[in-house]
Length: 343
Image 1 (cartoon, one colour):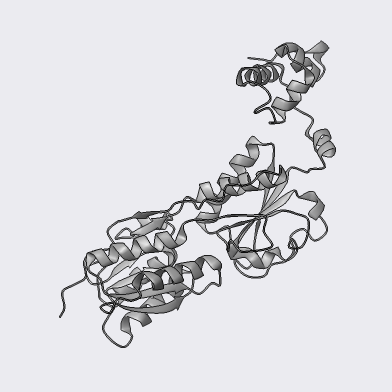
Image 2 (cartoon, rainbow, N blue to C red):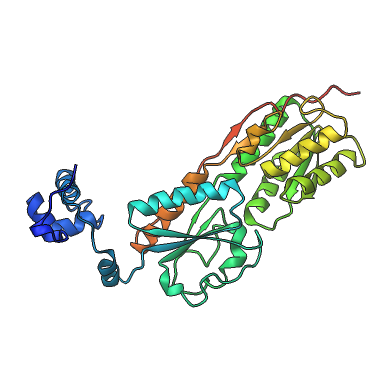
C-alpha cells in the first residue's frame, strides 16, 4: 500500500509525524531516536512509529549525527573472514547496530593474526567506537590511547585499554570436555593447543591443566598445533607416535585442529573413537561435516557480536555494559567413546 503524500508531495517532517500521531515534536524525537523508554508510554511510542510508517518518514540522520557529534559507525576488527565463527560474530553485531541506526565496518587482519596495517590512519574521526577480537590485538595499536571506546571480545578482563569486555565461559567449556572424557574412563590425554598467541587459548590451556592436575592416574601432555587442518594433522601424528603409551584422548583447542587430529588417527591405521577419542571447540559447521561427527563445545558466536555492539552502545550512552560471561555448551557426538581396553 502506498504511503499518503504529505503536504503536497514534499518529504515528510517530524512535525508531520507529530500531527499524524497527535503528539509533540519532542515526543517524536524521543521515540525515533530510541530515547523514549521511561519517558514515553509503549502505546505512544507505537503511535509515533505507526505514523512515521504511514507517512514514509525517514529521519535526517546526517543532521542528527552532526548535532550529537556522532558518526553512528562502529569498526569490528577480526582476525579473518575465512573463519565461520567471526562471520557469525559480525552477523550478530550488525543486527543490533541496524536497530539503532548504526553501521558496522568490518576489518579483518590481512595476515589472519598478529600485526596489521592501521585501517583508518587518518580517519579515526569517522568512527564512534571499536569492537575487536582478542585474536586481532595486533591491529589495534592505532586505537589504544585514543578517545575511541574499545570493546574487546573474548579477552583479558584486566585489559586496561578497553572500555568493556564480552567474554565466553571458555574455562567452563574445557572443564566440560575433560569431565566428559574422564567419565568415559580416559586417563592418557594430549592437549593439542593452538600455537596462536591469544588470551582465549591461554585460558583453554589453563583450564585443561587445572582439570587434570593432582590426579596420579592421569597422564597429560601439551603439544602445540597450528590453527589449520594440515599442520594440526602433523602435530597430532607426532603426539600419537611419541614416546610412552599412546594417548587415548586428544583434546583440541579448535574444530580445525580436531579435524586434523582425526585425519592423523586414520593415517596411522587407528579409529576414532574406538582407539582414540577426539574433541573440538567452537562447534563450527565443520564439526558435523566430518565423520565421525565431533564432540565439541558450542559457542554462541552471534550472541557475542550482539553483546559486543550492545556494550559499545552502553559505553557511548554512559551506561554500564553487561559483564556476565556467555555460557557455552558441550555437544557430545560420535568422536568420543570409552578408551580401548589395555593391551
